[in-house]
Image 1 (cartoon, rainbow, N blue to C red):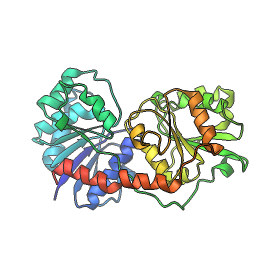
Image 2 (cartoon, rainbow, N blue to C red):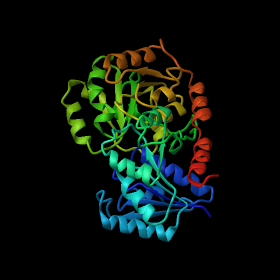
Image 3 (cartoon, one colour):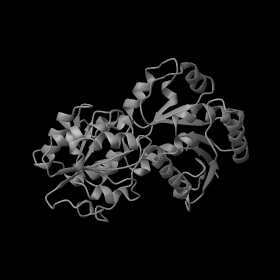
Image 4 (cartoon, rainbow, N blue to C red):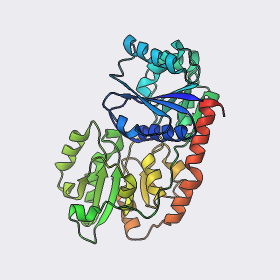
Length: 357
């Protein structure tokens, strides 16, 4: 039986964490023994009942030179003896790679889901050149961005694997957002989703809403460490009455089925999972030109692309979709996701990277 250890000790549930859950479930269903390392008290319940998936909870992730964490990881890896080790979060790259090498595990895959500045070239050199880790990214634009650092990354050691998505049924539960928020029947519901972080651009929502008709409302789902700060800034604006926060939602297809359109106003991404989720349910999208979005929307064929921080362009794109000047056929959006970003392709390429077959 093939075995892998997937490290994801996170306090935030977002796109990266969802992708770890998805890969763990699918690999487990294919007979791989999957061990998922999580922070104690965070998200273990979401992995319960998955076939061939074992959760290992750790008390803390520690700093870059925490010998206790390294010793704990080495013990785990020597006990499991995995064929591949996967680290989902950049902050864990050093500890996981070092621990893997000390434990005698040669195949280490490190995930990067968003473009980052190379702040520690020496550490990157140790990880990717001396310890020969593989970098996995989720878009060609992100791969190209990292390969600009030629002294650190070799093309054959940087692999692009698109995030995979299962097409949910078109028909299914809705959230009844209008009823829940007491909105009129002629109101238009614009969805946003993602953790509260400055890079997500949610601070722009008041300026966008100010440029839209009074019956257009924005509904956000998600959590995050900057939640209080970003909400406070929005709630200080008069437009806040048309910006609504629903918090964490376990049934995301129900959320997307409840929308008239979806807005991604991010300043930086790798390949935004939420765009895939919206398109997979035929929801029209407006997205900033963050890394990955041009690939995902095929340069505007399957959604409207606007410049980062351009609130005028976002508002115009939203109005054009609402009034029917810009339109997208829901079945074409769904077919595009199924064809190019399907689950079979992702798990096949993941297995090839992890196990060579």
